[in-house]
Length: 134
Image (cartoon, rainbow, N blue to C red; front, side, top):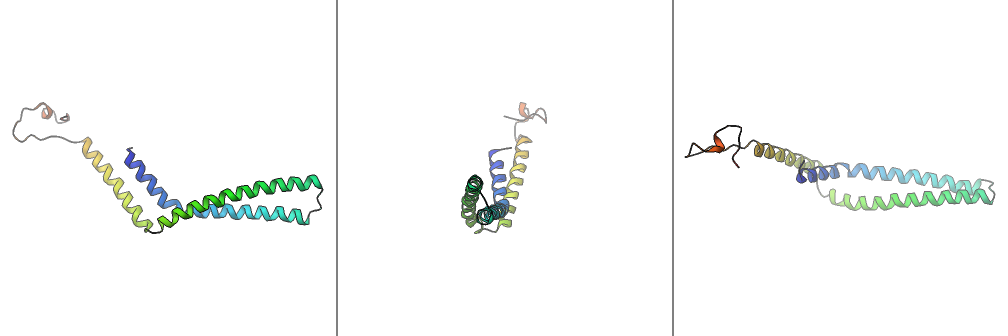
């Protein structure tokens, strides 16, 4: 696969998956918020001793840090989504797919290239049909 094809495939995946990535991050944030609320209720309503409070607080800190990572990632995705929303994703993805097909067709044509002499017929590069002129 050529660098151009790899780039176009990455670009296609980017436009196709940005909405899914946003939804996944929002789901992760929601789940960590539920865990945070559970821990806060445990602190509020549980009859905990000092060691248990410290364990809950440590877990709460970890959950909050995880939530922050998801929120920071979501901010990046939303910035990129602002870019992708300017374009109709289906149209640009269709154009990318067409460009990939065109590249494959061009590569096939280049691999099967043959020279047909116009004036001189005894050239080595046309002695055999399978041999290409270099």
